[in-house]
Image (cartoon, rainbow, N blue to C red; front, side, top):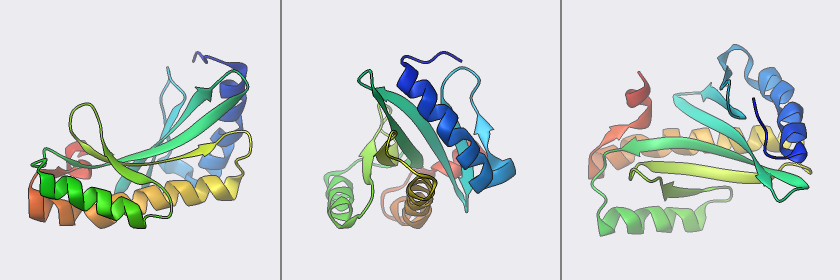
Length: 147
Protein backbone atom coordinates (compact mmCIF):
# COMPACT_ATOMS: atom_id res chain seq x y z
CA UNK A 1 0.00 0.00 0.00
CA UNK A 2 1.26 3.45 -0.88
CA UNK A 3 0.75 6.52 1.28
CA UNK A 4 0.96 10.11 0.09
CA UNK A 5 2.51 11.39 3.33
CA UNK A 6 4.18 10.01 6.43
CA UNK A 7 1.38 11.48 8.57
CA UNK A 8 -1.20 9.52 6.55
CA UNK A 9 0.77 6.31 7.06
CA UNK A 10 1.14 6.88 10.81
CA UNK A 11 -2.54 7.65 11.19
CA UNK A 12 -3.57 4.52 9.28
CA UNK A 13 -1.24 2.40 11.41
CA UNK A 14 -2.79 3.98 14.52
CA UNK A 15 -6.42 3.34 13.57
CA UNK A 16 -6.04 -0.14 12.06
CA UNK A 17 -5.71 -1.95 15.43
CA UNK A 18 -8.49 0.18 16.91
CA UNK A 19 -10.90 -0.72 14.11
CA UNK A 20 -9.94 -4.39 14.40
CA UNK A 21 -10.50 -4.33 18.16
CA UNK A 22 -13.82 -2.49 17.87
CA UNK A 23 -15.34 -4.38 14.95
CA UNK A 24 -13.46 -7.69 14.97
CA UNK A 25 -13.93 -10.10 12.10
CA UNK A 26 -16.14 -7.79 10.07
CA UNK A 27 -13.23 -5.53 9.07
CA UNK A 28 -12.41 -5.51 5.36
CA UNK A 29 -9.08 -4.04 4.27
CA UNK A 30 -8.36 -2.67 0.82
CA UNK A 31 -4.93 -3.79 -0.30
CA UNK A 32 -4.03 -0.73 -2.35
CA UNK A 33 -5.52 2.24 -0.46
CA UNK A 34 -5.82 3.13 3.24
CA UNK A 35 -9.52 2.33 3.50
CA UNK A 36 -11.20 -0.11 5.88
CA UNK A 37 -14.77 -1.35 5.71
CA UNK A 38 -16.97 -2.49 8.57
CA UNK A 39 -20.50 -3.78 8.93
CA UNK A 40 -22.41 -2.26 11.82
CA UNK A 41 -26.03 -3.25 12.12
CA UNK A 42 -27.40 -3.26 8.59
CA UNK A 43 -25.01 -0.59 7.32
CA UNK A 44 -21.60 -0.85 5.70
CA UNK A 45 -19.23 1.98 6.61
CA UNK A 46 -15.91 2.78 4.95
CA UNK A 47 -13.16 4.38 7.02
CA UNK A 48 -10.60 6.19 4.88
CA UNK A 49 -7.40 7.90 5.98
CA UNK A 50 -6.43 10.82 3.76
CA UNK A 51 -3.58 13.33 3.90
CA UNK A 52 -4.32 16.78 5.28
CA UNK A 53 -1.34 18.82 4.26
CA UNK A 54 2.04 17.23 4.95
CA UNK A 55 1.80 17.01 8.73
CA UNK A 56 -1.63 15.52 9.45
CA UNK A 57 -4.37 13.25 8.17
CA UNK A 58 -8.15 13.19 8.08
CA UNK A 59 -10.17 10.09 8.98
CA UNK A 60 -13.39 10.07 6.98
CA UNK A 61 -16.14 7.56 7.65
CA UNK A 62 -18.67 7.23 4.84
CA UNK A 63 -21.73 5.05 4.39
CA UNK A 64 -23.76 4.80 1.23
CA UNK A 65 -27.42 5.28 2.09
CA UNK A 66 -29.47 5.04 -1.12
CA UNK A 67 -28.63 4.58 -4.80
CA UNK A 68 -30.89 5.52 -7.68
CA UNK A 69 -33.28 7.78 -5.76
CA UNK A 70 -35.25 10.44 -7.63
CA UNK A 71 -33.11 13.48 -6.79
CA UNK A 72 -35.93 16.00 -6.52
CA UNK A 73 -35.86 19.42 -4.94
CA UNK A 74 -38.02 17.98 -2.15
CA UNK A 75 -35.42 15.27 -1.41
CA UNK A 76 -32.55 17.78 -1.45
CA UNK A 77 -34.48 20.04 0.94
CA UNK A 78 -35.17 17.06 3.21
CA UNK A 79 -31.48 16.09 3.33
CA UNK A 80 -30.38 19.67 4.03
CA UNK A 81 -32.94 20.08 6.80
CA UNK A 82 -31.82 16.80 8.36
CA UNK A 83 -28.19 17.98 8.13
CA UNK A 84 -29.11 21.04 10.19
CA UNK A 85 -30.11 18.78 13.07
CA UNK A 86 -27.17 16.39 12.90
CA UNK A 87 -24.55 16.51 15.63
CA UNK A 88 -21.95 14.57 13.66
CA UNK A 89 -21.73 14.23 9.91
CA UNK A 90 -23.92 15.17 7.01
CA UNK A 91 -25.72 13.80 3.99
CA UNK A 92 -24.26 14.38 0.57
CA UNK A 93 -24.22 13.08 -2.99
CA UNK A 94 -21.30 11.31 -4.63
CA UNK A 95 -20.32 11.77 -8.28
CA UNK A 96 -22.89 9.14 -9.34
CA UNK A 97 -25.77 10.81 -7.48
CA UNK A 98 -25.82 8.22 -4.70
CA UNK A 99 -26.83 9.51 -1.27
CA UNK A 100 -24.07 9.18 1.31
CA UNK A 101 -23.62 10.05 4.95
CA UNK A 102 -20.13 11.13 5.96
CA UNK A 103 -18.19 12.40 8.98
CA UNK A 104 -14.52 13.44 9.24
CA UNK A 105 -12.18 13.79 12.21
CA UNK A 106 -8.58 14.98 12.58
CA UNK A 107 -6.14 12.08 12.56
CA UNK A 108 -3.46 13.44 14.89
CA UNK A 109 -5.87 14.17 17.74
CA UNK A 110 -8.23 11.24 17.27
CA UNK A 111 -8.52 8.62 19.99
CA UNK A 112 -10.21 5.23 19.87
CA UNK A 113 -13.46 6.43 21.48
CA UNK A 114 -13.80 9.31 19.02
CA UNK A 115 -13.25 6.97 16.08
CA UNK A 116 -15.79 4.49 17.45
CA UNK A 117 -18.37 7.25 17.90
CA UNK A 118 -17.81 8.51 14.37
CA UNK A 119 -18.16 5.08 12.75
CA UNK A 120 -21.22 4.09 14.77
CA UNK A 121 -22.98 7.41 14.15
CA UNK A 122 -22.39 7.22 10.40
CA UNK A 123 -23.61 3.62 10.22
CA UNK A 124 -26.69 4.39 12.32
CA UNK A 125 -27.58 7.38 10.19
CA UNK A 126 -27.41 5.26 7.03
CA UNK A 127 -29.50 2.55 8.66
CA UNK A 128 -32.05 5.00 10.10
CA UNK A 129 -32.66 6.90 6.85
CA UNK A 130 -32.35 4.37 4.03
CA UNK A 131 -35.86 2.88 4.25
CA UNK A 132 -37.42 6.31 4.74
CA UNK A 133 -35.73 7.76 1.64
CA UNK A 134 -36.53 4.74 -0.55
CA UNK A 135 -40.20 4.84 0.52
CA UNK A 136 -40.57 8.51 -0.45
CA UNK A 137 -38.14 8.97 -3.36
CA UNK A 138 -37.45 5.49 -4.68
CA UNK A 139 -34.09 3.95 -5.35
CA UNK A 140 -32.49 1.11 -3.51
CA UNK A 141 -30.85 0.85 -0.12
CA UNK A 142 -27.10 0.84 -0.57
CA UNK A 143 -26.90 -2.31 1.54
CA UNK A 144 -29.09 -4.13 -0.99
CA UNK A 145 -26.62 -3.16 -3.73
CA UNK A 146 -23.82 -4.89 -1.83
CA UNK A 147 -25.71 -8.17 -1.43
